[in-house]
Length: 90
Length: 158
Image (cartoon, rainbow over all chains, first blue to last red; front, side, top):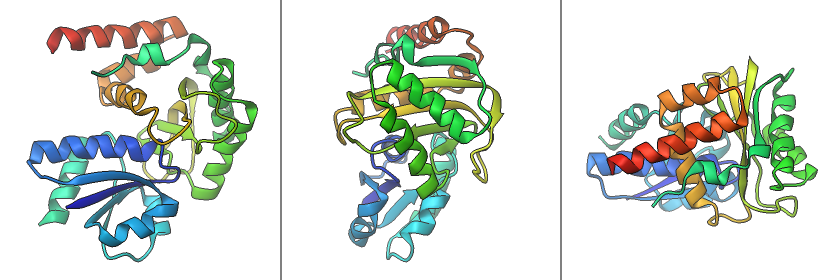
């Protein structure tokens, strides 16, 4: 499974989101590739990904893609990430 | 092995309990602190503000916390951070995480060279108790001491 963490620049918030998502996946025992991406390349990368994680503002920019787009409000709330990932994978 | 955030942060790049009238001023404080630490030039500060103008307040990634940054550019001299706590929180226009009382300035030379620093940063920001103590800290020395002491505690546990 491929998951993309998206931010505006690809060096800051997406990197933090990627780290915390990997932590959650380890706890859940789910094997997945998590990549950080900036908004410019995210649409293309989303083509072969199952899930896109990002913030509300950027979810609108990503627009219509095959992958499920999940909005994370607090990038440091592992419970929120766990909950939203789990329901997306159901 | 995670690096200690205290070693990544120059005392010159820390501002405690400063005042900003709006989010632009708050980012400017974080940018000036990066410049003071020799991380960036003034141009990067303008680039960080332009990023929010263009993409919105997505940099407010947790309640009260903004990670001000732009992409790698000639205005970045080295990968680094700044740390700014605001006496009066300011609104960035984020629907859920406003108002912001901690602005972290971030600059990187490329997409990979700063990952250890990001891991150290994530380790600090995940710790709500430590963040509360850091927000209350009154001086750059106190901020650095808190970050360093946490690292010691972690080593003791691992």
